[in-house]
Image (cartoon, rainbow, N blue to C red; front, side, top):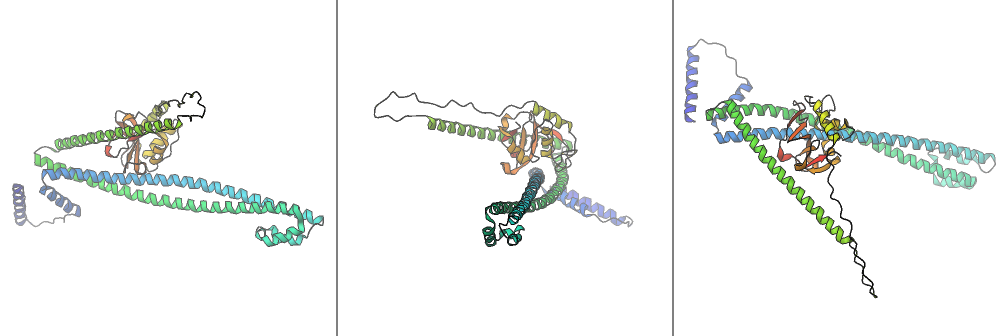
Length: 431
């Protein structure tokens, strides 16, 4: 380290002498990027090899965290779009029902007018006393209605009761339609908010990724100098280290999945035993003993396992493979795709509908241990180990390989399962 500093000082002195003895020439001032790069190089030169190793892990972790944040934001946007679709359908239904109720009310008012006119022509009452109450506003005046009924009798009473009921229904439906309209407006605003958040997270992730690549390259170069190797050899060395780390993470994730599966099986067996004990019939001994009936036991239930994947799964895989190289697009279902969009269109091609949202897709599929995943099953990644934190989904191909729409700038691809520390212990089987 000391020798390197001496060399740097000597180089600087030589440069200074050269400048002083040379003719004066115009030299452009260093840019901010040049200054930042020089500072970074100096910082790396001050680090030990161990510190440089830590630096590599840190920049990778920062990039991964930014990518997770962007993916979470993208899936939140997908959920907002799903919510907007539901709100739109609810509003349309509420408007139609309100319109139908209003039309029924108007028809009832006309029928009431007919009954009143008939009653008046037969001399059974005073039409002037009921006229104000043939409008929608007048029908709510109970005292006036009672005075009118005393003049017009049972026929008018029955019709008026019906119209009042129709008015109440129309009012309720109108209120429901208004609430649905407000809910849709809120859903539209939520989509806009989530879209802005996703855009911001994506831009930040892209910036961090660019910084990571530059920093990673600088650290690799410094390590190559320290170890007296080449950048190529040091890059391969780091890839081998990362592969070992991924392998360890995979083993830990599979062990955790096996433990969870064992716990679930034990719980199901305990629940079954308790149910059998409750259903076992033990008759009370009567005062006059009778032959004891044979105890009844419920039939042994067959253990349930999700059905194996069939032609639908293979068809979805085949369709997804046709999309290899397609760009990543938020909410895309063609020609660009996001992670859940790729899953949606792949299974739609074989007549199976899945919601375009990874958390919903987890809820819509049967759960199998990740250790029992079969081609066509869905692999999920979560930030908190539960459904609420799911931010990515891919289609399993077998042999630890998946097909996915990963993120911005990376097209639909086939790759190995990665980030095992975030992989959900259950895969989703489409049935």
